[in-house]
Image 1 (cartoon, rainbow, N blue to C red):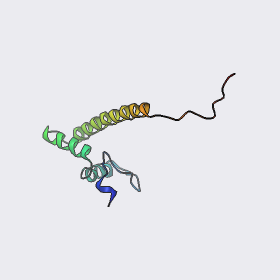
Image 2 (tube, rainbow, N blue to C red):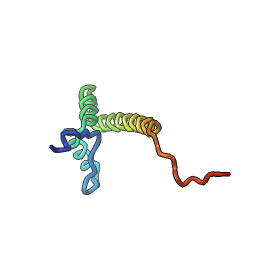
Image 3 (tube, helix red, strand yellow):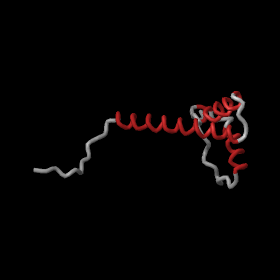
Image 4 (cartoon, rainbow, N blue to C red):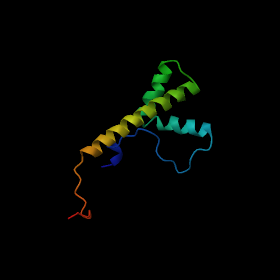
Length: 94
């Protein structure tokens, strides 16, 4: 069974070579929109709202950064809930 069936893509996978121009970045975003629900939803919402050009990408950046913040806070809450073993190497006084 392939793990790709169970994975969720939010953003853009790490490329072998980083884009060097805005056009290459736009192309990477459009290609990633096929697999990323976040990118697809943002671009669809922008198109539905009548946005075009740079406004569309500003909206994408805005919603992606909001989602990043939400996921960061969720990760912090998850980490706080985890049971951690005591540190065996803590020097005890006494």
